[in-house]
Length: 495
Ligand code: NAD
Image (cartoon, rainbow, N blue to C red; front, side, top):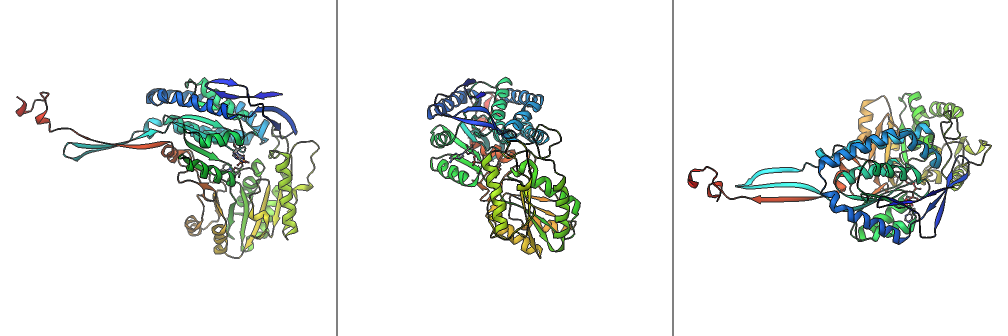
């Protein structure tokens, strides 16, 4: 059984709290690790380490910081397969998907490698006679990241590279479900040459989060997770004077217009709904089929679903792995039953799939005739269930998205440029895809939803990440008329 520790001040530290949590391999259902859960003292030690490292780190030259960030980028690239293997072992996602997660994570490190450009500031010469005004962005101090189970490597790397590039030091509290990959990327960070204390990892649960939320030396918190916890983190953190960005849950709609390319829409719906067992905050969970596209689209999705290979993520043939826990599997199955009880039609019922092992597997479900009052529509399932809501018009489809409390992503499938452009305007969501089901922005844009999908006014990574992890300082300077200078500058009056 693997013992999974904290990383505090550059040293692997076993827990002293006496509390631990089991970590499972979801593909076998067997416990694979024992995770130390931090006490308040361990959180305090990690924050103290980060605080002690801050002064030196913020005064480290941009040239040195850039070099270290490039070292780190190269180490993550070299170790991409190992990171992916750890993701699959504890999260369950298939290896190809895990590799995709690492690739998206690397984008964020590469963005931070350009820190010299991002931190240039601005300058106004001669705002008044002899007066110049310039703005710089300064680091905040110790910042903390609290991350979810579904992207255990990528989400921490949405935060750490930008925060550290800006001169902050960092305390990461990863999900307790799959902590090995985030711990490993932190070990690579040390190996890249960053000083001890610049990045600390504390394993833990609510005890750890609650301490970070009130610790006076934590200046900012980036959170990614479910909506109720995001709201709690946002409210508690800001009440304690911290800058908080809290990205939350989702219910993403994919509108398919009657003129859409059915094959493209069906391929996209299947990969976006069932990839990573539906455990993505940008997963498509509702297909809104407009007019007579519904029947051919559902047939095309069903044809693909029937061929989907579900199995251990380490098997290259597998296209979808297990869910994260037995509870998540059972909760998802419960939503399928509730949908059927409420009048939905199970075109495919994932509970009928058989798996001859103890892993947390569930087949995929496709529910037709879903209406907005059903729990399979109102709740974030976070499992492999795709609901189809039929509408008569584009307007009704847009209204559904507007009425939904979440607003992370939304997509439209159409061949009509005018309709697509109109949807860009109408979709009440932070990230919109046109014939792209999962419009996760590249690392040089920023990621974040609207409404109950995000709390706080700054989205994550990219330019908004730089903004979040820095505070502005504006300097105004006046120098006397050079003619009156005590130093001989060669002006006639000085001679
Ligand atoms: P979660 O909210 O259960 O956990 C997230 C983090 O909060 C973990 O580190 C966990 O230890 C901590 N936490 C859990 N309960 C807590 C409590 N009561 N008090 C304090 N801290 C607590 O989320 P999850 O199940 O790990 O992840 C899935 C959720 O994350 C989904 O809702 C998904 O949509 C969301 N998510 C959102 C985004 C986004 O960018 N909007 C990205 C990924 C995941």
